[in-house]
Length: 154
Image (tube, rainbow, N blue to C red; front, side, top):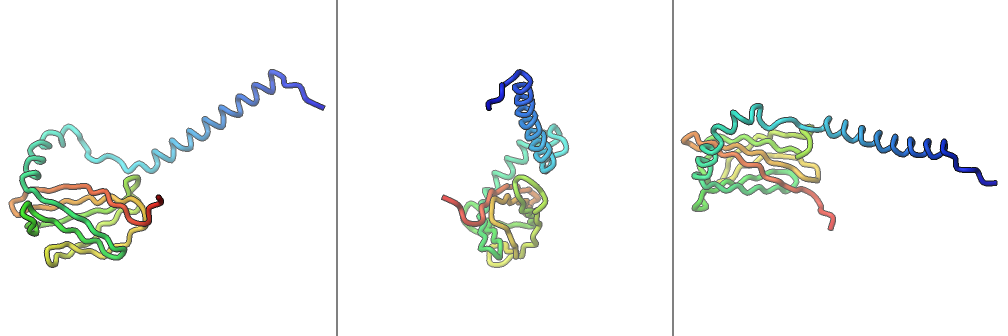
């Protein structure tokens, strides 16, 4: 025995389909907003006023940062244009995921032999290294380095 497909059935099928789509979209939007880490700066206008000057000063340092992570320790090598250790007066580093702040870490680095070292435990995946170093003359050097730790699936 076959049932007849009526207008009421078609309406219920359509409402159920669109209801499911809307419910999934609402859940995904809620989760996206809930994990958004926030703004980079409080006022983009204020930050823009010194951006070009700060960028030129940082570029003039000609520093190059190389991270290395062996699963137990993060090593940051900061070199000048000639390849010598850069004269870093102060170093602040935050390491975290690009999508949320729950796993952010601020390791304490020690300086030895031209490198900065800190014990660190990172779960596999993508990490951002937010580095702020200060030169002896007060010039601030900022860099974000994308770092991948773990096994890549090929």
